[in-house]
Length: 158
Image: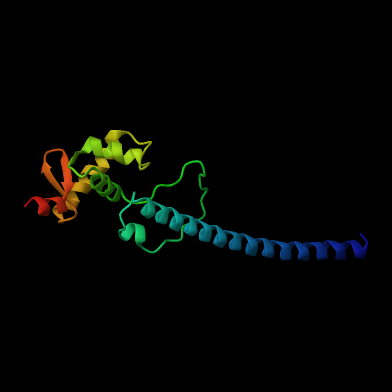
């Protein structure tokens, strides 16, 4: 083989190494930008939820944003933010009266939270969470079996 050919192959290999290093840098920067974009999308969604009044301002909606790995974001269906208890509180506030678990779940799903999950699955998550909140002296109370209300309403009626 001619010397020029060997030199050219060696140069191409060196050039490929430089290109590989640059590609790694570009991929890292892309990941950083995607994380930043996701964080901004989360902040906007949380602010829109608070503005609409669909979410109470709590530690979960007003807390610091966590940077997550880049993920595909579905544009057709906006992401719903807040815990199940945040939604339960908002639903009860809007109703202004105690609600059964089934009514709460239907209203929560109407707001987009856990809309695709079966009622029994949501109930299995919601009821223990409500009961734990009641045991800890949280915002909920249980006036009778299967019914939940806000603790603030007890103070008004007492």
